[in-house]
Amino acid sequence: MRMLVAILGLGLAGCGEARGPEASGGSEGDRWALRVEDKFPVADTEGHGPDVGSEEWARALQWKLGMVDNEGHGPDLGSAEWRAAVEEKIGGLGE
Image (cartoon, rainbow, N blue to C red):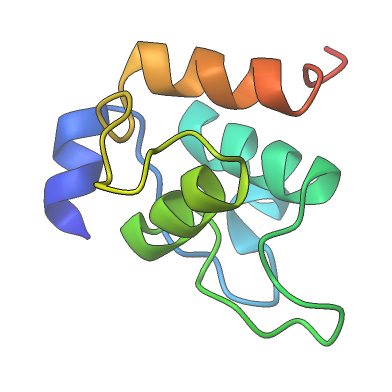
């Protein structure tokens, strides 16, 4: 997890059910992940799923969006290209 945060430089971190980063003025990366999750949930309807912003969440999101092929090839997880592809796949974040 820490490695993903370091690679992204965005401070993506798991936030749990309380969605603390948004309420406490979390990083831009935290807010981005929460906006993506609000628009395109990775969790099921009962809230089961990886922590928003975690590496597990990012991998589940890209798989669910069809951003990787059967061998797992696609944009580098967390890169600017990856984020742009996520936003394109979900129709933007309406900012």
